[in-house]
Length: 199
Image 1 (tube, helix red, strand yellow):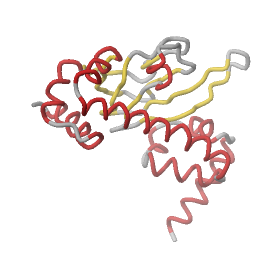
Image 2 (cartoon, rainbow, N blue to C red):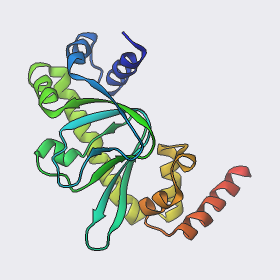
Image 3 (cartoon, rainbow, N blue to C red):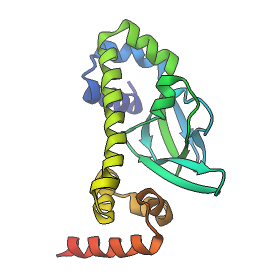
């Protein structure tokens, strides 16, 4: 097994306690894809057909408002996270968002058809599907709750917990969009957080 395939296998074991047989039976369905910065994993108004696992890189999921021409960042995916527009993936309806590589990236991916086939034939893969649904439900609800219950600074520190080096890897205006604040506000928050960490 190659190093990359072992990375995939280890992640699947950790995520859903899949057996070696579960993983080996799925191997023919997982493909690798190298993506350049600016490439799209999925496009707005298209059905999301693949579930990806990020091996290297950062992706953003964002909505492009055709009226204002403004992009609004919804979420980021980085190493060892699954990347997908989950509602589109399971409903087979067009996606409301773009998913874009923010730096040169590499992923494993599996199609909806192949993953659904594994659900039907392997009980542990069916459990994987349930855990995947729970994971993305938690992401969606947490994002909503952050805007209700947390300050801008708290949302920023939570982002750093999820993606520790994101500040060095993507432009600040993308983080501002994700947090729902202006660039000057982000700059002030970063200074406050950094000064706390120094103490």
